[in-house]
Image 1 (cartoon, rainbow, N blue to C red):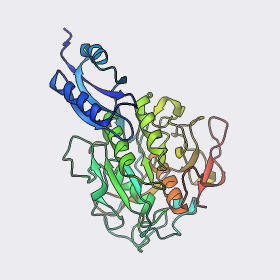
Image 2 (image 1 turned 30 degrees about the vertical axis):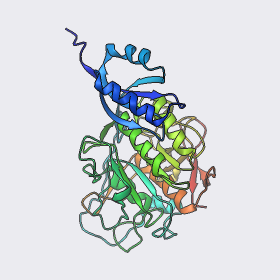
Image 3 (image 1 turned 180 degrees about the horizontal axis):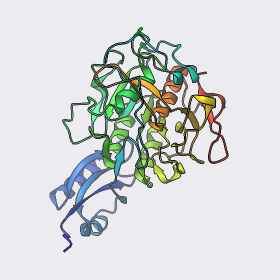
Image 4 (image 1 turned 135 degrees about the horizontal axis):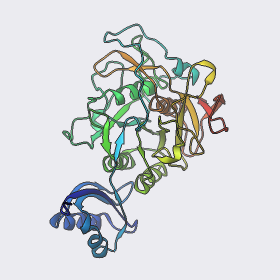
Length: 360
């Protein structure tokens, strides 16, 4: 027996011409009916997420001509399904003497003190361990779009903390050094302690960056889901049009990145990143590839900060993307500018080797 009253989560996108107040009115009317409104969007796009019985969808579009389209919400993950974080060695809870990870050296990072920089990194991920002594975390500008406490951006998974360390771990003699050492990292929590989240929550994170981000900032998205989302695609492009750079993980499924979101998103200031290993700049076997990939960055045996203190090593395009984010910030790239490159990856499955981005 099918329960037709079962509510399904959707993302409702309104026409760009709709005012924010009208969007709020529509969300309120839907909530007063059969829908349960979740996130509301007003900067990266106009709209909201809603849980509503499937058979009520048609009535929704008929009732509100302002609706552009409706997408079903999907699951998002720190590592796209089919991939594997491949936890490596280097696990340590104590503050050890500082190491320079091989990836930071490969992209020519770690040379510019970014502690007083005006640009920041928005880490759209599982949160960041604000107590890690090797990270310059600004919780006050962050946000939590998971089901947890909205003011809690701490990292119960470890993924976001690792990403943040690659971008900007301090050059302080302990643990590791990041590509843009000391740069401010802002936790935009869209993934829970299991490393999972929803498309609607990820869009809310991008909306937050579109609202508060500044030109020259970089947003890192080491997450993904199978398929395509017009809503997420549009949200990222809108935020990027304001001068915020986006570094997107290509995914770890060993497939064409065009089948994954947001890896397939393209546009000015938007870069999708594949992974390479330390030996001979070889393409990582697990990395997605294809026309949508812009650069290759270190993503094998990447040592970085661990939630709770110390360091840990991981593999994945999730580890490659923050290298590019650090390169952008430390290079001081402006709206529409491209990073410098140094060679190309070897053994790229698509036959068109991805360039390796490095600091200017």
